[in-house]
Length: 220
Image (cartoon, rainbow, N blue to C red):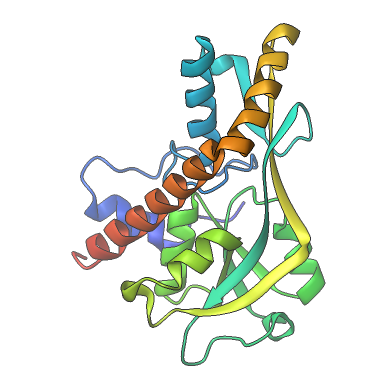
């Protein structure tokens, strides 16, 4: 895989204690604010606490195994002044995207665009601000939230959701009796709004980390 985009290097130089970390993983980490924090890790942690089990007992990802916890579509965000107005205009252009996003290859092939993967959703957003791509392709809910923030007014042009480009997070647990409890919680969380609250918190975390990164890059 190609070297990290310069956002990762600049962040490592400016943020005390922040390093380039491990190589980019192909595992989809939804709404990732940094190398450790994502919707995946949050769901696993809350499940572990609720079911009095260890985080290692839960595998959260786009594997299709276990219980479906989260579903969304992708969208794209570009510059308000001259960003693309439709997906077809991405032909020959680059797009920032979190590594492991299951729709990365599909977007590249469908629109003839060039993917630039980043270690997290937050860093992919900053890649757009740095001019490393024409748009950032991400979770539609995240981008719709970002586009409303004052600090993103220069990058607030949204391309619509791709209804046929779904992304999913499944939770598989071991042993089987633990999976039954996970399935019961999945139904409860959808019904009582607990899952939506976790999603909204993850979106807020990504937005905040992107804000911190943007502010920190000014130090260079």
